[in-house]
Length: 578
Image (cartoon, rainbow, N blue to C red; front, side, top):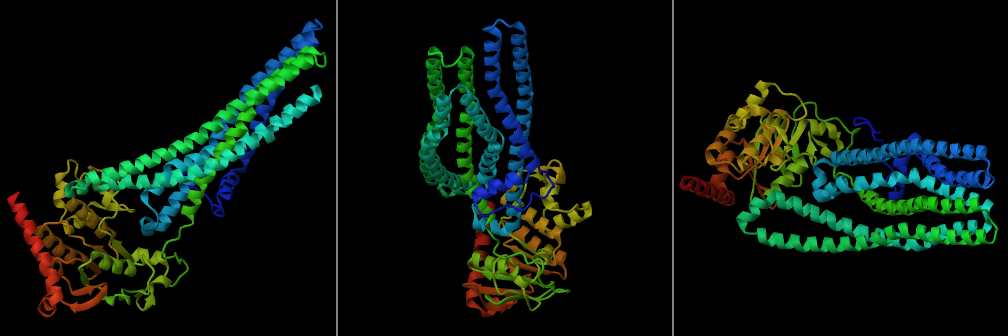
């Protein structure tokens, strides 16, 4: 199977069928072994009726005990051998399925990592979850076709050859079976793909809704919107259920045919063979063998229908996977691009007019936080723009160098479940003193001391066991521990009370020293500590200067900051009343 640390290879993204074939080609030895073992398994099953017929004709009817014993021993030997072959076939096909499953998981996770911050902008979380949970299993299951599927075709040919030696009429009836099955099941496979595609799309939407509901339930409850959201979710669930019924209806017909069609062939071939035996055209042993062939034939026919069913579903799943793999990040990874500036340099965003001088604390104040966040995305290389770093276009610099030296700390960045130490340490081991300095700079001492085991205390995913202000400070600790040359943080103190916010602003300035820091905020407590403040209106610089100068000279800036100050006063009053 694919190793957890092994390169899964470059998937074939030219289509769903090509992707499935790529999964088979990545494990050729195992796929060939599965086909050979599957063929041997079904062929040995078909050989048993032949041996039984010889035991009857050569032993029982003639009274030859030696022949009877010989053919019976051969029948027993074939049965034992086939038991071992069946075990090996099952083991091999389990490995084939698991390899396809894990390989798909790895390429999907790799693509998610490659997209990075662009992932939530291009595809919903529900779609990624549905691919990771449902589609990979469906794709892995479809690889069964390389084992029992191939074996079914081989055994079908073997049985047809054996029947041809008994009766050309019976062989002709048998050979006409495959086209008959294709005519019956083929249209249903097309309907299944259409119904399954619609079902998967709605399932992805609903999964995303569940994620939104889980993450925003507290806010929805506070705003009185929980009932409205629940009604919409109930309607979507009803539509998904109806779509599921359509998929189930087609599936039930396919599975019913998988059982019913072989049974009809069994009855038809047995009836014809009985008539031939009654006329003396075939022997009793041949009659028994024909019944055995027809009975054995139910297995490969059922496998053929099942494989068609699994492949039909897998094509839908693979189409979703290929679509996800085709997504490209907004900023391409120009690994062979230009080198970043050798020393700290100016970051400039022509679209807004913001110039970030190295070694200074710069704050962007804007009535719409989305406009300020867009500036950070452009300066951080997360969206296409003409932004420059040291006079060189940012999108021309090797992305790895940009990511290594410029960090954009989003206000709702993910927090993964684990200990608080692991949550803030990131990808590198941190010493106790390093963590202590970052914790103090983010004024997060009370969080550590308030937990039973301190830094080693477990924290839920997304920090759900923490308050909003605590989560915000934990994110700030993580960003400070990363210690980038340029740190950009979006609203890093918006959930804090005035006293804590002032302490964070003071300590952040001291901790970053002469390194470049860019914040977005409208809080006067943060703005007053900035070296440079940019006032943005409709995403462009309207004024630039110190906080106090802008207060004195810019009425629109004064109105923006005064509104924020009023909000702070209201928050403090509310806390005092509580």
